[in-house]
Length: 490
Image 1: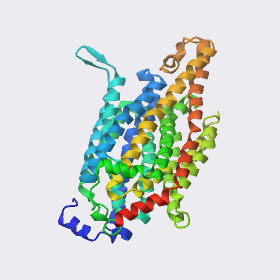
Image 2: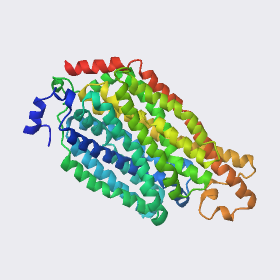
Image 3: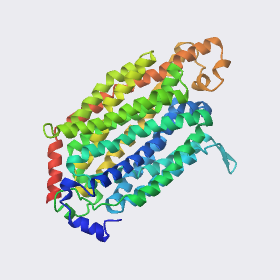
Image 4: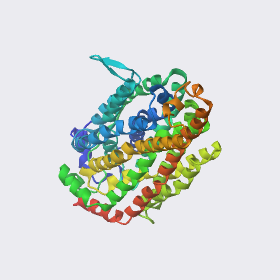
């Protein structure tokens, strides 16, 4: 059902009443929100599966940490980010549910195709499995660009302002639940049937989800939950929309903060399984089940708790949606430093779990701020611009930074220990370590894990800058939200 059907036009005539009640019945709103959460979970399962099965992929492909950072980060994020804003502009004017359904189907098919990545020959030229996998990852990025901007726009029309932070926090759990599910499902499949099977198993069900989304989720009238007369706000062009965003300092402070958070978060999550594999000797399956699952489950609870807490405190502390996650990001730093510096597995797991719980509340904040400081016709664009910055700088360079620093430190360490001929592949490839001389094996056992460990420690400290950005946003947040409400009510 689109916003041009008789039923939708009748709903549109009731606009203003939804400012307090929301669109549709309470039960149906909950169904729609849960469906969008499932889509977002699927989004992050497909996105993070590569990191979850990293310990199995890297030795087979014979690539160093920098190349793995390129495969998991830039290979996905650049295309995902560049396409995100045009897709968001489509979402401002076209049927959002149709758009999301098509994108879910596309990224699911491309995820399954990742499982078919092998060395191929075209016109006599041999293309390695790494490049085929990278091409499929680009396809996943194209599809996933059509998820969050229309989803947050839909949620903002289904839920009134007083309920949005909790709703968006609930939706935001898809980041951590999806990352957790990638390990919960993908890691055991990869361990027993190979990493290629994991991509096929995870990818194909998304086609069914796309069909269910289209058949059961209604397209609400735009701005239904905004103040009366919000439906009279005309369509806003991209240039005018950007002019509005440029006048919102709270938006940009938030964007800078969450970009730093994404830089750290995507980098750490990309290498987390590899880190525990090198440091504690855990297999792909054990790293997924005993580390990633509890860490991301705790992170999901933290995301929801932040939105819930901010909603309860909003009357007394209007800026709670920004300063609570900002404080959480800063508080996460010592826990991550503990996790990446200890040789005791239990302490490492404790640091990762607590760090994830207090950190991930920024997801609820970023969507609440992006939707709240602009008029209804700019919401998908503001979300897309935030995601553009977050992913182009954070997702593209976070994994590359950790991988690059790790490889630099590895080279420095093997040189200092008198084994300059050693490479990462020699230390990591299956059966390779046992063939090395005893002195070389000893150096591998030091340089291979410690280089990544120190890179993770350096990156963790940057969470403090992320928290500072959100706290600084509090200075302008209420003023920017009030001006957006004034435009809607004009």
